[in-house]
Length: 268
Image (tube, rainbow, N blue to C red; front, side):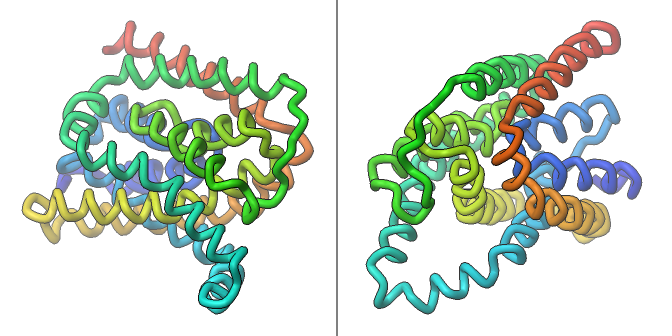
């Protein structure tokens, strides 16, 4: 990672922060951008570790709510229900990701054509789902039935395929389970917290012997850029999807996926 430039790290960090919490696949965008920029990180660690910036952004926005949940956890049944629901939703991707880590990082992450294909497929799915006139029955993220939390978690497991999108898979799963659009996006924020922290910690552990102090400046720049960009996105996303839905993100996925495949055909 020593040979990479600060400018590349800055661009990829901004890309991570701008795309992490919208259903377009931040990992897919970063891997494609890295491919065409010639950016190669040690063990693909940069792409995972800069997510810490996005994690801290979501934690800072929801700090007040998280603090209140922590205070009420011992005595409030609804808070305990919500925390248990988040853990249930987190477990499927955590188990599958841990078991399949090496295959995912060494094979799926190294396939730009797969990423582009998943961006296109996910874009079509998002456009179709956004057009369906669902009759939402769940509006409060803290009151979903435990079975709904589990099903959303199973959908999140699809995001282990790069280009699928963690937020996209959870949002689509939630919409199909009868959750309204705003609550679907909000729950994807809460589910992101343990999921991204877990991925960060696990990847840091797996790469503990290959990362060096020379990697720190590049990762730090990417982390700061991701934090600032994600902070902006999180503050505006819920209101946007409540009013406009998810169609814009579906079209963006199609555009990036098709452009990526065309670029691969021309430049490889």
